[in-house]
Image (cartoon, rainbow, N blue to C red):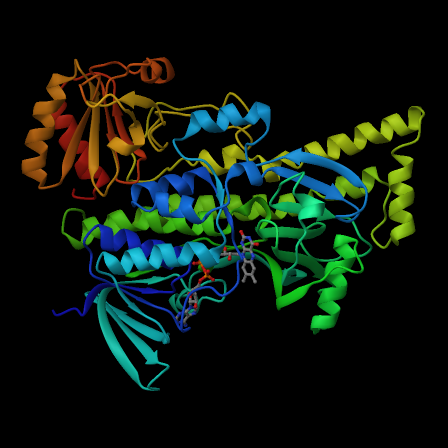
Length: 578
Ligand code: FDA
């Protein structure tokens, strides 16, 4: 049967752009469509966490992202205040920039976080996808699909010419955002609550250097009258570009009709939160959106898969939106590539839901809880929801009294702000993803020694991502374990004594016809010169780890007994070839 393309991707946002980039990188024929004339026109998602940076690194675009992103030094001094010009309630060092968390973050990954607004991220994904062979069609709207056992027929509308046409593909990916038509037509079950709270985004330009440059941050949280109403926990002035491009988030009452916000009203809100009535402001856009608590319990139906906001919808708290979307597509792309090439059975694709749906639910729950965890700050200040500015000033003054009551209040406020570590330093949420599925051979159960949401725990348990460790390469430069795996293929990791595995890998490569690389710790290209690999993992030299293209560990064997048979059986199971 003739196919026009292997995969149609609907949407060129973080999920669709990553799917197109990864599939094109793996040599899969891909067509990506977007109903608009170009990519995101508002900054929207921005926090780009270490795991996402590792994904971008594997896909060869990390340097480009770094070029356009704002670095950690300008990201982390999160401020809570009564206005940018007014009193501070407190600060919290964020995104691993605090003295104590910085070393933990640095140890966890070769990559650091950046702030990369969606307007800068999407062109990196899509232009590189196109350069690697993906076909990209703008002004092209997905209308519907019909699927049968051999493929999917997709109906598209050319919004320039105005005519419709059909594309035949093996698979369809719906990366078409929170109002996903693909997910709806595929009948994906969406659990949770829609429309929890009303929010507005106001983008504007204004030079705020004098209010922020001495406490550089991505986020300035503002306690103004009405801050409790809707929105994402408090008023927010968010840096888009330091220090003159901004996005303000403010709430509205979801039980009332949605407000229409004129530029004059938007200017008034900006000046109120900045605390400067004379501030020159240029409003660039206003938009309304709702806070949702939704997640799909299945991410696919037959040959149709959904990724990103199509399957998880939540507030921007924790900055998980585009990160999770990118990571969904990265999980799906190598599986599709191997199935399209005939190297894996179609049942491998079932593991996409098995692995990503629990993560989707976890991050939707986390983001919503983080939003709610502003409540204790209001309580510590004795601020009832509808307090006016005098009430806020009185609450703050009560926190500053020079007596035991004041001391008690100060400790309560500190504790309430500390709770926000679960939003601003949730390193475990970002990095501890563990997959349980038929693409992972279970064993070696693991327990977390610290709070699994706050702290990253490196692990060589099957299902975990291969830990980052610096090794030394043949040219004497440092090379990271993650750089020696991935790139679309499986890798068998062993030590110098693991010679039995070399013969097993050679044999399996031929019998299963897959691209299986070998990484030998302590070989000249991967010397454990610092001893960190053995210190961190205590893994026997003659054992083996089978690493998937997405760097997650699929199988672990601590002894070389029956190496060839054991490796063959493991790969057959993982790749659904039995
Ligand atoms: P995304 O919505 O980005 O992309 C969907 C794509 O599908 C677009 O290219 C769209 O044009 C296309 N499309 C849709 N229907 C189509 C059709 N029928 N045919 C063809 N193409 C179609 N997150 C965060 O972390 N911090 C933040 O501050 C914000 N702020 C924010 C504001 C607003 C207004 C929104 C709507 C969202 C946010 N988010 C956010 C969320 C964040 O933007 C979101 O998590 C990611 O963009 C999700 O990426 P996706 O690729 O899944 O969808």
